[in-house]
Amino acid sequence: MATQEKNDSHHKALSINLDGTIFGSFAEIGAGQEVARWFLRVGAASGTVAKTICAYDKEVSDDLYGAGTRYVSKPRLEAMLDNEWAQLLVQLQATRGATSRFFAFVDTISARNFAGTNDCHGWMGLRFLQQPGGEPSQIVLHVNLRDSTNLRQQEAVGILGVNLIYATHHALGSSTEFLASLFDDLTLHRIEIDSVDVKGPAFAGWDERLLHAQLVAGGYAEAVVFPEDNQYLPANELLYKRSLVLAPGRFDSVATLHGELIRSTLADLPAPEVKDSKGALGLFCLSTAPGNGEERHVTAQEIVDHVAELQKLGYGVIVFRARELYTMSAFVNRYTKSRIHFAIGLTVLVKLMEDSYKNLEGSLLEGIARLFAQNVRLSVYPMPAEEVERRVKNAELNGWHWQVTSGMVYANELYPDAPLGHLYQYLLSSEFILIGKPKGSEAAAG
Image (cartoon, rainbow, N blue to C red; front, side, top):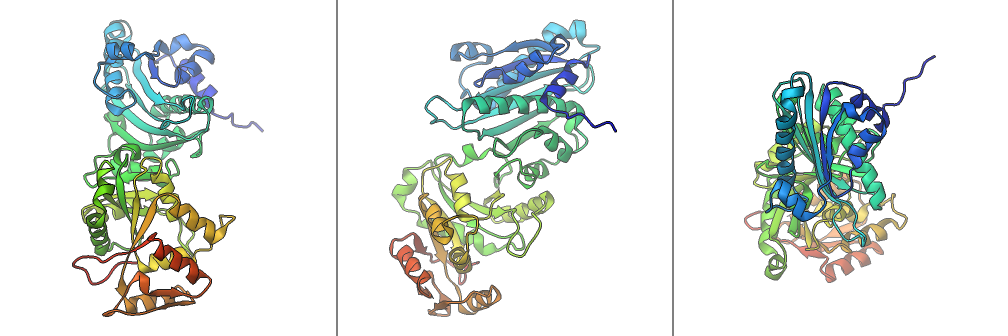
Protein backbone atom coordinates (compact mmCIF):
# COMPACT_ATOMS: atom_id res chain seq x y z
CA MET A 1 0.00 0.00 0.00
CA ALA A 2 1.36 3.43 -0.91
CA THR A 3 2.30 5.74 1.94
CA GLN A 4 1.86 9.48 1.94
CA GLU A 5 5.15 11.31 1.54
CA LYS A 6 5.96 13.76 4.33
CA ASN A 7 5.39 17.37 3.30
CA ASP A 8 8.50 18.75 5.03
CA SER A 9 10.43 21.95 4.31
CA HIS A 10 12.34 20.36 1.42
CA HIS A 11 9.18 19.23 -0.34
CA LYS A 12 7.33 22.46 0.39
CA ALA A 13 10.13 24.58 -1.08
CA LEU A 14 10.46 22.32 -4.10
CA SER A 15 6.71 22.36 -4.78
CA ILE A 16 6.79 26.18 -4.75
CA ASN A 17 9.78 26.19 -7.12
CA LEU A 18 7.98 23.85 -9.50
CA ASP A 19 4.84 26.00 -9.54
CA GLY A 20 5.46 28.26 -12.51
CA THR A 21 3.14 30.99 -11.24
CA ILE A 22 4.70 31.82 -7.85
CA PHE A 23 7.59 34.28 -8.22
CA GLY A 24 9.15 36.79 -5.87
CA SER A 25 11.99 38.19 -3.79
CA PHE A 26 13.62 37.54 -0.42
CA ALA A 27 15.15 40.14 1.90
CA GLU A 28 16.50 38.85 5.21
CA ILE A 29 18.37 40.63 8.01
CA GLY A 30 19.99 39.20 11.10
CA ALA A 31 20.00 35.40 10.93
CA GLY A 32 21.46 34.80 7.48
CA GLN A 33 19.45 33.97 4.40
CA GLU A 34 17.91 30.88 5.93
CA VAL A 35 14.57 31.05 4.11
CA ALA A 36 15.98 31.84 0.66
CA ARG A 37 18.55 29.07 1.15
CA TRP A 38 15.83 26.43 1.14
CA PHE A 39 14.55 27.52 -2.25
CA LEU A 40 18.05 27.81 -3.67
CA ARG A 41 19.24 24.38 -2.60
CA VAL A 42 16.24 22.14 -3.34
CA GLY A 43 16.48 22.76 -7.08
CA ALA A 44 14.53 24.65 -9.76
CA ALA A 45 15.04 27.93 -7.85
CA SER A 46 14.86 29.95 -11.06
CA GLY A 47 11.15 29.20 -11.10
CA THR A 48 10.61 31.13 -7.85
CA VAL A 49 13.50 33.40 -6.88
CA ALA A 50 13.66 36.79 -8.56
CA LYS A 51 16.13 38.19 -6.02
CA THR A 52 17.59 37.43 -2.64
CA ILE A 53 19.32 40.06 -0.51
CA CYS A 54 20.78 40.34 2.99
CA ALA A 55 21.26 43.99 4.00
CA TYR A 56 23.35 43.16 7.05
CA ASP A 57 25.25 46.44 7.36
CA LYS A 58 23.24 49.18 9.08
CA GLU A 59 24.20 51.88 6.57
CA VAL A 60 23.25 49.64 3.66
CA SER A 61 19.96 48.81 5.40
CA ASP A 62 19.22 52.49 6.03
CA ASP A 63 19.96 53.33 2.41
CA LEU A 64 17.50 50.70 1.22
CA TYR A 65 14.74 51.01 3.78
CA GLY A 66 15.22 54.39 5.48
CA ALA A 67 16.68 55.40 8.83
CA GLY A 68 14.90 56.18 12.06
CA THR A 69 13.52 52.80 13.14
CA ARG A 70 14.93 50.00 15.26
CA TYR A 71 16.39 47.34 13.00
CA VAL A 72 14.42 44.52 14.59
CA SER A 73 10.97 46.05 14.71
CA LYS A 74 7.62 46.04 12.95
CA PRO A 75 8.18 49.49 11.36
CA ARG A 76 11.48 48.28 9.86
CA LEU A 77 9.82 45.13 8.55
CA GLU A 78 6.99 47.12 6.96
CA ALA A 79 9.52 49.46 5.33
CA MET A 80 11.27 46.41 3.92
CA LEU A 81 8.00 45.02 2.57
CA ASP A 82 7.09 48.31 0.92
CA ASN A 83 10.50 48.66 -0.73
CA GLU A 84 10.80 45.08 -1.95
CA TRP A 85 7.23 44.96 -3.24
CA ALA A 86 7.55 48.24 -5.15
CA GLN A 87 10.84 47.17 -6.70
CA LEU A 88 9.42 43.80 -7.70
CA LEU A 89 6.49 45.38 -9.52
CA VAL A 90 8.63 48.04 -11.25
CA GLN A 91 11.05 45.43 -12.56
CA LEU A 92 8.72 42.55 -13.42
CA GLN A 93 5.09 43.67 -13.77
CA ALA A 94 5.39 44.44 -17.48
CA THR A 95 7.04 41.14 -18.41
CA ARG A 96 5.56 38.66 -15.91
CA GLY A 97 2.56 40.37 -14.34
CA ALA A 98 -0.04 38.58 -16.46
CA THR A 99 1.10 35.09 -15.39
CA SER A 100 2.79 35.48 -11.98
CA ARG A 101 1.51 35.47 -8.45
CA PHE A 102 4.16 37.80 -7.05
CA PHE A 103 5.38 37.73 -3.47
CA ALA A 104 7.87 39.62 -1.33
CA PHE A 105 9.21 37.79 1.72
CA VAL A 106 11.13 39.74 4.39
CA ASP A 107 12.41 39.14 7.88
CA THR A 108 14.50 41.02 10.44
CA ILE A 109 15.79 38.77 13.20
CA SER A 110 17.88 39.08 16.36
CA ALA A 111 19.29 35.57 16.69
CA ARG A 112 21.47 34.58 19.64
CA ASN A 113 24.58 36.76 19.79
CA PHE A 114 28.05 35.46 20.62
CA ALA A 115 27.72 36.38 24.29
CA GLY A 116 24.17 35.05 24.57
CA THR A 117 22.89 38.29 26.11
CA ASN A 118 20.26 39.48 23.62
CA ASP A 119 16.51 39.02 23.31
CA CYS A 120 16.22 36.36 20.60
CA HIS A 121 13.22 37.40 18.53
CA GLY A 122 12.24 38.94 15.23
CA TRP A 123 9.64 39.91 12.67
CA MET A 124 8.68 38.02 9.53
CA GLY A 125 6.37 39.25 6.78
CA LEU A 126 4.98 38.29 3.40
CA ARG A 127 3.07 40.31 0.80
CA PHE A 128 1.59 38.16 -1.93
CA LEU A 129 -0.98 37.76 -4.70
CA GLN A 130 -3.48 34.95 -4.84
CA GLN A 131 -3.88 35.41 -8.59
CA PRO A 132 -1.94 37.41 -11.20
CA GLY A 133 -2.93 41.06 -11.22
CA GLY A 134 -5.03 40.74 -8.07
CA GLU A 135 -5.06 42.78 -4.88
CA PRO A 136 -2.15 41.96 -2.54
CA SER A 137 -2.57 40.41 0.88
CA GLN A 138 -0.10 40.68 3.73
CA ILE A 139 0.81 38.86 6.92
CA VAL A 140 3.29 39.94 9.60
CA LEU A 141 4.44 37.66 12.44
CA HIS A 142 6.37 38.34 15.60
CA VAL A 143 8.44 35.32 16.67
CA ASN A 144 10.46 34.38 19.74
CA LEU A 145 13.42 32.06 19.15
CA ARG A 146 13.73 29.50 21.95
CA ASP A 147 16.64 27.33 20.78
CA SER A 148 19.84 27.71 22.79
CA THR A 149 22.26 28.12 19.86
CA ASN A 150 22.49 30.54 16.96
CA LEU A 151 22.63 27.71 14.42
CA ARG A 152 19.46 26.06 15.71
CA GLN A 153 17.67 29.41 15.72
CA GLN A 154 18.68 30.00 12.10
CA GLU A 155 17.30 26.58 11.20
CA ALA A 156 13.98 27.36 12.90
CA VAL A 157 13.71 30.69 11.05
CA GLY A 158 14.30 28.89 7.74
CA ILE A 159 11.61 26.29 8.42
CA LEU A 160 9.08 28.91 9.54
CA GLY A 161 9.72 31.05 6.45
CA VAL A 162 9.17 28.12 4.09
CA ASN A 163 6.02 27.17 6.00
CA LEU A 164 4.73 30.74 5.73
CA ILE A 165 5.15 30.97 1.97
CA TYR A 166 3.65 27.51 1.49
CA ALA A 167 0.71 28.09 3.85
CA THR A 168 -0.34 31.32 2.12
CA HIS A 169 -0.75 29.37 -1.10
CA HIS A 170 -2.04 26.03 0.18
CA ALA A 171 -3.56 26.36 3.69
CA LEU A 172 -5.91 29.34 3.75
CA GLY A 173 -9.10 27.38 4.31
CA SER A 174 -9.25 28.59 7.91
CA SER A 175 -7.04 30.22 10.49
CA THR A 176 -6.81 26.87 12.31
CA GLU A 177 -5.53 25.12 9.19
CA PHE A 178 -3.16 27.99 8.44
CA LEU A 179 -1.53 28.04 11.89
CA ALA A 180 -1.11 24.26 11.90
CA SER A 181 0.66 24.44 8.52
CA LEU A 182 2.77 27.35 9.76
CA PHE A 183 4.09 25.20 12.62
CA ASP A 184 4.95 22.05 10.63
CA ASP A 185 8.29 20.57 11.78
CA LEU A 186 8.44 23.10 14.65
CA THR A 187 7.59 22.92 18.34
CA LEU A 188 6.90 25.46 21.05
CA HIS A 189 10.32 24.63 22.50
CA ARG A 190 11.92 26.01 19.32
CA ILE A 191 9.84 28.97 18.29
CA GLU A 192 6.82 30.99 19.44
CA ILE A 193 4.46 33.14 17.41
CA ASP A 194 2.84 35.65 19.76
CA SER A 195 1.53 38.31 17.38
CA VAL A 196 -0.04 38.11 13.92
CA ASP A 197 -1.23 40.96 11.71
CA VAL A 198 -3.17 40.06 8.55
CA LYS A 199 -4.82 42.15 5.85
CA GLY A 200 -6.09 41.73 2.33
CA PRO A 201 -8.50 39.44 0.46
CA ALA A 202 -6.68 36.21 1.39
CA PHE A 203 -7.70 36.75 5.01
CA ALA A 204 -11.19 38.12 4.44
CA GLY A 205 -13.52 37.13 7.25
CA TRP A 206 -10.75 36.18 9.66
CA ASP A 207 -11.24 37.40 13.24
CA GLU A 208 -8.03 38.95 14.59
CA ARG A 209 -9.10 38.31 18.19
CA LEU A 210 -9.77 34.64 17.46
CA LEU A 211 -6.49 34.35 15.58
CA HIS A 212 -4.52 35.57 18.60
CA ALA A 213 -6.53 33.32 20.91
CA GLN A 214 -5.65 30.36 18.68
CA LEU A 215 -1.95 31.15 19.11
CA VAL A 216 -2.09 30.28 22.80
CA ALA A 217 -4.92 27.72 22.68
CA GLY A 218 -3.21 25.84 19.85
CA GLY A 219 0.21 25.75 21.47
CA TYR A 220 1.98 28.21 19.19
CA ALA A 221 2.83 30.65 22.01
CA GLU A 222 3.42 30.32 25.75
CA ALA A 223 1.38 33.48 26.29
CA VAL A 224 -0.42 36.15 24.29
CA VAL A 225 -1.28 39.66 25.44
CA PHE A 226 -4.68 41.19 24.69
CA PRO A 227 -4.28 44.94 25.41
CA GLU A 228 -7.26 46.89 26.62
CA ASP A 229 -7.44 48.78 23.30
CA ASN A 230 -6.96 45.60 21.21
CA GLN A 231 -3.90 47.14 19.54
CA TYR A 232 -1.94 43.90 19.56
CA LEU A 233 1.70 44.03 20.58
CA PRO A 234 4.11 41.20 21.38
CA ALA A 235 4.92 40.70 25.04
CA ASN A 236 8.51 41.91 24.62
CA GLU A 237 7.23 45.37 23.65
CA LEU A 238 4.30 45.74 26.03
CA LEU A 239 6.04 44.34 29.12
CA TYR A 240 9.54 45.67 28.49
CA LYS A 241 11.07 46.98 31.74
CA ARG A 242 7.60 47.51 33.25
CA SER A 243 6.68 47.22 36.91
CA LEU A 244 3.76 44.79 36.69
CA VAL A 245 0.64 43.96 38.63
CA LEU A 246 -0.97 40.71 37.52
CA ALA A 247 -4.37 39.52 38.73
CA PRO A 248 -4.88 35.77 38.15
CA GLY A 249 -8.45 34.73 37.40
CA ARG A 250 -10.55 31.84 36.16
CA PHE A 251 -12.46 31.26 32.96
CA ASP A 252 -15.62 30.33 34.83
CA SER A 253 -16.16 33.80 36.28
CA VAL A 254 -15.65 37.50 35.71
CA ALA A 255 -14.99 39.15 39.06
CA THR A 256 -15.35 42.91 38.97
CA LEU A 257 -13.37 42.93 42.17
CA HIS A 258 -10.24 41.72 40.37
CA GLY A 259 -10.14 45.11 38.65
CA GLU A 260 -10.25 46.75 42.08
CA LEU A 261 -7.35 44.57 43.22
CA ILE A 262 -5.26 45.75 40.26
CA ARG A 263 -6.11 49.41 40.91
CA SER A 264 -5.35 49.13 44.61
CA THR A 265 -2.04 47.31 44.08
CA LEU A 266 -0.94 49.77 41.39
CA ALA A 267 -1.70 52.65 43.76
CA ASP A 268 0.38 51.04 46.52
CA LEU A 269 3.50 50.35 44.42
CA PRO A 270 6.54 52.06 45.94
CA ALA A 271 7.39 55.22 43.98
CA PRO A 272 11.11 54.33 43.59
CA GLU A 273 10.12 50.95 42.15
CA VAL A 274 7.95 52.58 39.48
CA LYS A 275 10.51 55.31 38.80
CA ASP A 276 13.23 52.73 38.08
CA SER A 277 10.99 51.00 35.52
CA LYS A 278 9.33 52.06 32.27
CA GLY A 279 6.14 52.64 34.25
CA ALA A 280 3.56 50.45 35.95
CA LEU A 281 1.11 48.23 34.10
CA GLY A 282 -1.81 46.17 35.39
CA LEU A 283 -3.11 43.08 33.59
CA PHE A 284 -5.52 40.27 34.26
CA CYS A 285 -3.94 36.89 33.67
CA LEU A 286 -5.65 33.65 32.74
CA SER A 287 -4.49 30.11 32.02
CA THR A 288 -5.81 27.77 29.35
CA ALA A 289 -4.53 24.71 31.25
CA PRO A 290 -7.10 22.38 32.82
CA GLY A 291 -7.72 22.98 36.50
CA ASN A 292 -7.96 20.29 39.14
CA GLY A 293 -10.48 17.67 38.09
CA GLU A 294 -10.77 19.07 34.56
CA GLU A 295 -9.69 17.35 31.37
CA ARG A 296 -9.88 19.82 28.52
CA HIS A 297 -8.03 23.01 27.72
CA VAL A 298 -9.96 26.22 27.15
CA THR A 299 -10.97 26.84 23.51
CA ALA A 300 -9.98 29.85 21.45
CA GLN A 301 -13.57 31.12 21.36
CA GLU A 302 -13.82 30.88 25.14
CA ILE A 303 -10.65 32.95 25.38
CA VAL A 304 -12.10 35.62 23.08
CA ASP A 305 -15.37 35.82 25.02
CA HIS A 306 -13.77 35.97 28.46
CA VAL A 307 -11.08 38.45 27.47
CA ALA A 308 -13.77 40.80 26.12
CA GLU A 309 -15.58 40.71 29.47
CA LEU A 310 -12.40 41.42 31.42
CA GLN A 311 -11.38 44.28 29.14
CA LYS A 312 -14.60 46.05 30.10
CA LEU A 313 -13.12 46.40 33.59
CA GLY A 314 -10.39 48.68 32.26
CA TYR A 315 -7.32 46.45 31.88
CA GLY A 316 -5.71 44.22 29.30
CA VAL A 317 -5.35 40.47 29.66
CA ILE A 318 -2.41 38.12 29.28
CA VAL A 319 -3.41 34.52 28.55
CA PHE A 320 -0.92 31.79 29.49
CA ARG A 321 -0.79 28.11 28.64
CA ALA A 322 0.60 27.27 32.10
CA ARG A 323 -1.36 27.80 35.31
CA GLU A 324 1.44 27.98 37.92
CA LEU A 325 2.31 31.48 39.12
CA TYR A 326 6.04 30.69 39.00
CA THR A 327 5.72 29.79 35.31
CA MET A 328 3.80 32.99 34.60
CA SER A 329 6.43 35.08 36.37
CA ALA A 330 9.25 33.26 34.55
CA PHE A 331 7.67 34.23 31.23
CA VAL A 332 7.25 37.86 32.27
CA ASN A 333 10.83 37.95 33.56
CA ARG A 334 12.07 37.51 30.00
CA TYR A 335 11.13 41.14 29.42
CA THR A 336 11.35 42.95 32.75
CA LYS A 337 13.55 42.78 35.81
CA SER A 338 11.28 45.14 37.72
CA ARG A 339 9.21 43.66 40.53
CA ILE A 340 6.12 41.63 39.69
CA HIS A 341 3.14 41.86 42.03
CA PHE A 342 0.41 39.23 41.91
CA ALA A 343 -2.83 40.74 43.23
CA ILE A 344 -4.73 37.77 44.66
CA GLY A 345 -7.40 36.78 47.14
CA LEU A 346 -6.96 34.47 50.11
CA THR A 347 -8.08 31.26 48.42
CA VAL A 348 -5.50 31.67 45.64
CA LEU A 349 -2.86 32.02 48.36
CA VAL A 350 -4.09 28.87 50.13
CA LYS A 351 -4.06 26.90 46.87
CA LEU A 352 -0.54 28.12 46.18
CA MET A 353 0.63 26.82 49.55
CA GLU A 354 -1.32 23.55 49.26
CA ASP A 355 -0.21 22.66 45.73
CA SER A 356 1.81 19.43 45.61
CA TYR A 357 3.91 20.65 42.64
CA LYS A 358 4.16 17.09 41.34
CA ASN A 359 6.02 18.24 38.23
CA LEU A 360 8.92 19.53 40.34
CA GLU A 361 11.46 17.31 42.07
CA GLY A 362 11.54 19.63 45.08
CA SER A 363 7.71 19.77 45.28
CA LEU A 364 6.39 22.66 47.42
CA LEU A 365 9.77 24.07 48.43
CA GLU A 366 10.98 24.21 44.84
CA GLY A 367 7.72 25.77 43.64
CA ILE A 368 7.89 28.49 46.31
CA ALA A 369 11.60 29.09 45.62
CA ARG A 370 11.04 29.41 41.87
CA LEU A 371 8.29 31.95 42.42
CA PHE A 372 9.96 34.28 44.90
CA ALA A 373 13.44 34.03 43.36
CA GLN A 374 12.03 36.04 40.43
CA ASN A 375 11.50 39.33 42.33
CA VAL A 376 7.85 38.50 42.96
CA ARG A 377 5.54 39.68 45.71
CA LEU A 378 2.05 38.48 46.50
CA SER A 379 -0.35 41.27 47.42
CA VAL A 380 -3.07 39.28 49.17
CA TYR A 381 -6.47 40.83 49.80
CA PRO A 382 -8.97 39.93 52.53
CA MET A 383 -12.12 37.93 52.15
CA PRO A 384 -15.31 37.60 54.21
CA ALA A 385 -14.94 34.89 56.84
CA GLU A 386 -17.95 32.90 55.64
CA GLU A 387 -16.54 32.87 52.10
CA VAL A 388 -13.17 31.62 53.34
CA GLU A 389 -14.87 28.84 55.26
CA ARG A 390 -17.01 27.82 52.29
CA ARG A 391 -14.12 27.69 49.84
CA VAL A 392 -11.77 25.85 52.17
CA LYS A 393 -14.49 23.30 52.85
CA ASN A 394 -15.33 22.83 49.15
CA ALA A 395 -11.65 22.35 48.32
CA GLU A 396 -11.33 19.83 51.18
CA LEU A 397 -8.34 21.69 52.60
CA ASN A 398 -7.42 20.69 56.14
CA GLY A 399 -5.16 22.27 58.70
CA TRP A 400 -5.99 25.93 58.02
CA HIS A 401 -7.24 28.17 60.82
CA TRP A 402 -7.94 31.89 60.92
CA GLN A 403 -9.02 34.85 62.96
CA VAL A 404 -11.68 37.33 61.92
CA THR A 405 -11.48 41.13 61.98
CA SER A 406 -14.77 42.96 61.37
CA GLY A 407 -16.09 39.98 59.44
CA MET A 408 -12.99 39.75 57.23
CA VAL A 409 -9.97 37.45 57.17
CA TYR A 410 -6.58 38.94 56.25
CA ALA A 411 -3.48 37.07 55.08
CA ASN A 412 -1.70 37.63 58.41
CA GLU A 413 -4.67 36.06 60.21
CA LEU A 414 -4.27 32.68 58.49
CA TYR A 415 -2.55 29.94 60.49
CA PRO A 416 -1.75 26.69 58.65
CA ASP A 417 -0.63 23.78 60.80
CA ALA A 418 3.06 23.03 61.19
CA PRO A 419 5.36 22.45 59.40
CA LEU A 420 3.68 24.46 56.61
CA GLY A 421 2.88 27.17 59.13
CA HIS A 422 6.59 27.85 59.70
CA LEU A 423 7.18 28.44 55.98
CA TYR A 424 4.07 30.62 55.77
CA GLN A 425 5.18 32.80 58.68
CA TYR A 426 8.63 33.19 57.09
CA LEU A 427 7.06 34.45 53.84
CA LEU A 428 4.94 36.93 55.79
CA SER A 429 7.82 38.16 57.94
CA SER A 430 10.09 38.55 54.91
CA GLU A 431 7.35 40.51 53.10
CA PHE A 432 7.16 38.13 50.18
CA ILE A 433 3.46 38.09 51.09
CA LEU A 434 2.03 41.59 51.49
CA ILE A 435 -1.24 42.43 53.26
CA GLY A 436 -3.50 44.11 50.74
CA LYS A 437 -6.25 46.50 51.79
CA PRO A 438 -8.47 47.22 48.79
CA LYS A 439 -9.88 50.72 48.73
CA GLY A 440 -13.64 51.07 48.59
CA SER A 441 -14.16 47.32 48.68
CA GLU A 442 -15.44 45.04 51.41
CA ALA A 443 -14.23 41.74 49.98
CA ALA A 444 -11.63 40.34 47.67
CA ALA A 445 -11.99 37.74 44.97
CA GLY A 446 -10.28 34.41 45.42
